[in-house]
Image (tube, rainbow, N blue to C red):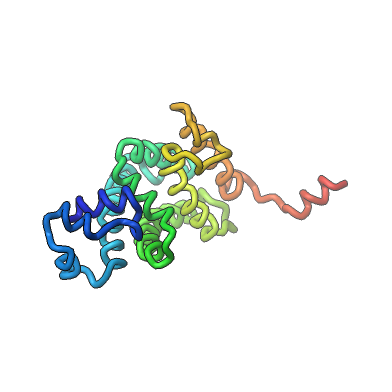
Length: 213
């Protein structure tokens, strides 16, 4: 049933996926699906969780391999490179991530995005917290804002190199083989300029005043 549901939701989205098709491909009666799930939203969340666990397992192994105790933005660059490569090699996970990220139905979107966000935050929050604690980030860094930016960047880089129309700026709409890596480095450079302890904070009001004069 899981394989049938992943194929259907990955192809058509969660709210537009057909439970009849899932049941037929799984060789079960449609009504039997709800012996295990309270409703369609519960089924959506379950499938999103299964797919997210596969991605998370890969990323946690990669994090250990890359050594998260390195300078944070150097580590983040390599992590994002690995993230992009993973979705290049795993079209089913990419399709389900797209289905969750681009879901148009509000109830379905809340169900699946809350699952994705939980996995993202469980993995990323300790990395940001530890980087802040060891001094890789400026002491006055708004780590919540950094987390919010990472929650935008990771899904974008998972999808934009492989789905037309998502990226008009970084060259990911029709990428050359090296373009995703260049995009990663541009984005990390912006984050480093804002949060890296090696980049002193700039008084933006003073800077604007100096520019005007």
